[in-house]
Amino acid sequence: MVTPQGAEPKHPGGGIFWDPAEHNGEGHPRRWAILGVLLVSLLIVVLDNTVLNIALPTIQRDLAATPGELVWAVDAYILAFAALLFTWGVLGDKYGRRRILLIGLTLFAIASAICAFSVNTHMLIGFRAVMGVGGAAVLPVTLAIITVVFPREERGKAIGIWAGAVGGAVALGPVLGGLLLQHPEWSEWLTGNAWGSVFLINVPIIAVGIFGIIRVVPETQNPNPKRLDVGGLFVSAVGLFLLVFGIIHASEAGTWIDPLVLGPVVAGVGILTVFVLMEARSDHPSFDVSLFGNRGFAVSLAAVSLAFFALSGIMFTLPFFLQVLRGFDTLQAGLCFIPFAVGQLLAAPRSAKVVGRFGYRPVMTIGLVAVGGACLGIAAMDVETPLWMILTVFFAFGFGMGNVMAPASTLIQNSLPLPQAGAGSAVQNTVRQVGGALGVAVIGTLLATTYAAAANETLADLPDQARVTASTSIVATDVVLDAEIDAGLPADQAEALRAAAYQDFLDATQLTSLISAGIVALAALIVILFLPAITPPEQLKQKAATDPGP
Image (cartoon, rainbow, N blue to C red; front, side, top):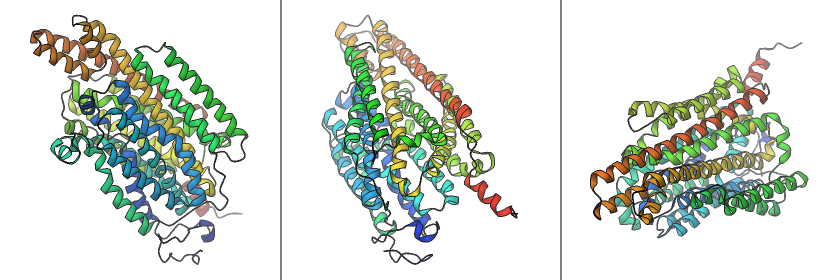
């Protein structure tokens, strides 16, 4: 059922399908309201990637979590999210994107509520994965709906706002988490622990989002959907799990050269290679390898994924630097991320206009240079760095990401046929999320192993068991040293050990930041060398309007 051309559907959320082909490519009459409603759903799902980060030190103390378990608490969500983006994108194309969006948000809300009451790390990790399953439905579907309801000439601006919301949510997650953790009595009254509120807050926000979707968002789907690629889904999930398991296990083993590290990593890479070959030969691939034959698509996706690798890794390490080494409370640490969000929100929505004037390559390159410079700035921080300098670096990081993510996402989506918007956006979001998961795994594990190696020597005067426990993390170091003081260790000696351990952790943090800067520099080089000169749709429209023709 369709409405006459140019007419507004009687009830945009009432099951009436919106097909741009029936309207000569004109945008949906309520497209901006649709965008606003979709952003509410998107914000809470993306925000949950980082809202947990600010709570990690608190959770580590409360549940006696190891560094590896903390990484899994973050990556269980990201991995399930990444593994199922393919499936949800195809299901949305086939059965209706609005329907899949509602199913995903409902599952996300239920799992969030259960996470809030976790009594151990296994329960937390398990239901974080379930949250990822639900959240995976939201990102590709929202981007697909935006692609369909907006005309091509407005799509860059709309995706810029979408990308700004994604980036802003990444930064605002720690702010919201810090605010909730600042009042643990609220959480303890509701959930019995000091941090459950960071999950429970999702439920009422999602309820508002679901109401808005039912009222405003139209149903869209691919008239010629693909069959679901069950085999590809299974193989990709196994490969991703083994790869990340091997990387994270290095933090438990204390070395990267271990059979349980190298074995799963090699097996994971091998299985993912098989997955790519399977998809290249499949007549209904969930991961359309042929898209990578488009150089604009491939280069943009590589750039944004490498930037997300750096972002995710640094966002994992910064809460420990701010809360433990700098002594900020959870709210103060969370507020430090506001400049990051401001930078994103300033840059991303305006990037379409800047791209229309200068082109994709210069804008994305400058954005990556800003991100790389911010990584170097973070590497230069220590416990004496003035707060204004920290906030300035965070702003530069966010501003750079806004000028990378929005143009890259627009360029990627504009290279896709509209009927494949869901599956295509799933490909870009999957690769980007895999980049984020690997960023957390690699940077988090490198931080843990580097600190453990240094702390084992620094804390050599402690009893063997205490030394081993203390070297697992900077939070464990604080707990062990406090216990040793109670057991009779002179306070001045304990504080000297604490200061030396803090320096070890700072050195490890600086190393990971330098590696992140190198990753971003590689992304910038790829854009400079390989991104083709592509004329933005805005320039084409202006040229067509001013060209008198033959």
